[in-house]
Amino acid sequence: AQSVTQLDSHVSVSEGTPVLLRCNYSSSYSPSLFWYVQHPNKGLQLLLKYTSAATLVKGINGFEAEFKKSETSFHLTKPSAHMSDAAEYFCVVSDGGATNKLIFGTGTLLAVQP
Amino acid sequence: DTGVSQDPRHKITKRGQNVTFRCDPISEHNRLYWYRQTLGQGPEFLTYFQNEAQLEKSRLLSDRFSAERPKGSFSTLEIQRTEQGDSAMYLCASSYSSGANVLTFGAGSRLTVL
Image (cartoon, rainbow over all chains, first blue to last red; front, side, top):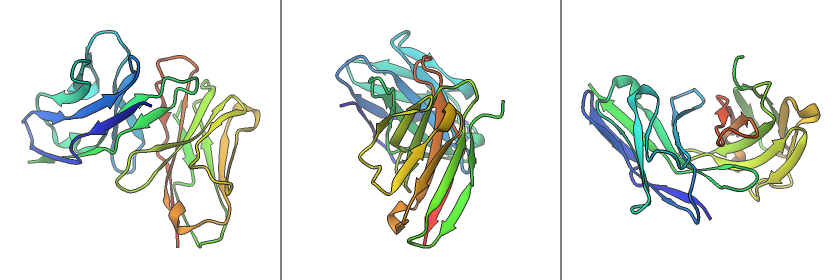
C-alpha cells in the first residue's frame, strides 16, 4: 500500500530564510506525488506534483520539490520564506488504483517569524 | 468558474441529529470525492463518484453515512444519528478523469457534534 510520512509536525523559520519540509514515501511502483497547502479557513491548494517526468519539480509561490528514488523522499523547499507562507503543508501520494484517490500525510505546520 | 463550493461551511448539531452537506464541483469535472479531516490529521478518503455512480467507499464510511450524486452534478453527504466522533471537517474535491489526479478541493464543511 502507498503511504507518506511527514517527518516534522511543526517547522519554524525566520522570514527570508530557507524552508525545508521533509516527506518520505512508500510505494510499490513509481508513484505520483504531490504537495498541497492549507491556509486557515481556505481549501487545500495544489503546490506542485511529480508524475515521473523531471525529478526536480517547480511549483507555485517559489516552492520546489525533488523526487529521490534512492532515498524514497520528496522534500519541499523554498529559498526564502515569506510571512504569507505560514500554513499547513501536506505531502500526498496517489494510490495508483482506478479511483486515483489521494493518501495524505499528517501535515507539517509552517510558522514564519518576522 | 468559482471552483468547488461546499455548504454549509459550519454546522453545530446535537448528538443523535441528522446532518447533510452539499458539494457543488467544478462543472466540467466528472469525478467527485469526499474526505474527512480531524484535528491534527491529514484528510482521509471517504468515498468517490464517477459521474453519478458511487464507485468506492472507505471502511471509514459507516452505515450512518450516505452519499449521493444525482445526475452526476452536485453531491450530498448525509450523516444520520450523529456522534461526537463525527466532529470533523468534511472536504469535497473534484477532478477530470485524466489530468494526473489533480484534485481541486472546496473549503470544507466543519461539523461540531455536541
